[in-house]
Image 1 (cartoon, rainbow over the protein chains, first blue to last red):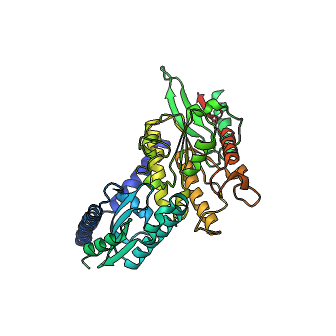
Image 2: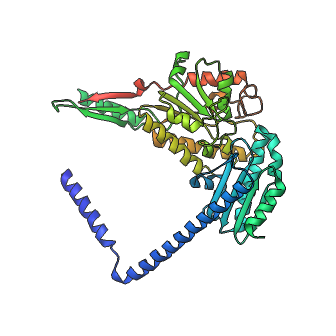
Image 3: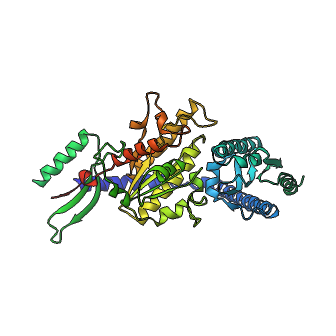
Length: 172
Length: 251
């Protein structure tokens, strides 16, 4: 009895699987979709490579190598972007128990991206008020610049150098 | 006979809304009977009150968390306690931020990876409380649970929910309560999905306003000596005795 039931279930599963096979008329549209998806993935990879290179350059130019480390890609949305689709690529460097941080983001929505960066800075400031008030001046003077969909955030103690660096990176 | 016992236990479990988990299954050499290890613990509920465990229990446990766990380290009077904390810890930075009060620059992630303690207590989330959601936090927490389980399949993991502080800067009520609910829901969901235990200090450490008892905290959040002793008592009276819930049934 149980065997028959299991066999029937398997048959139904197989039939459903067969029914979902793509007819030949829709093959070309599927191929086009795949090509578009691949192109988008290539663009995203290029964007990611670019923002990582720029962020690394900022860290080097400002001499922050000793104080910050690169964050893993997968954690960045949980720090800045709680809604999907705000950015297409991001790179972020952070410090342990200090405010120092560098972020470079390729924004799909520049205003939303800048708003997320602003929220991050406000949250960081609120935490520093309890744990490291001496670091708050860096957050108050954080550099957030944008050009052509690229948003740069720098938090460090050399504010003027940070501003010049952000402008240089963005070609302003 | 054993069939009857099994059926009775299953029936009881249905009445108390507990689905027994088949923890293990084996057959004897002759293949005459099968033994099932059934876990009747209710992972949907916080760990219930139990008999006070003595200080030797702490030798079997590791405690890891943010600055709230620091109170247990500083004021817990636990000799040889394996207690570690990171001030201002964001869980997403757990493999970057160094553990407080140590010289070796080790991270909490590394300590959790190294531990083979039988019981591991985790207290995270208060520094992420201003987040609009806890999706990334939950994913990171899941990774830690998976790592602990991979390293030691028999580990008892206790997730400690966030108690309701009196005050969090830049997060006034009712937003604070809403965020706490979201955080604790994420933590409870992790406990249920992974079959790990969770403690809810709000059950017993709160005042009539639903926030942590005033004398227990110095700044609305971090425990005083008195608060730490109450927290320690709470832990000591909320230990799961596996032998009560896990039964081997052979038929």
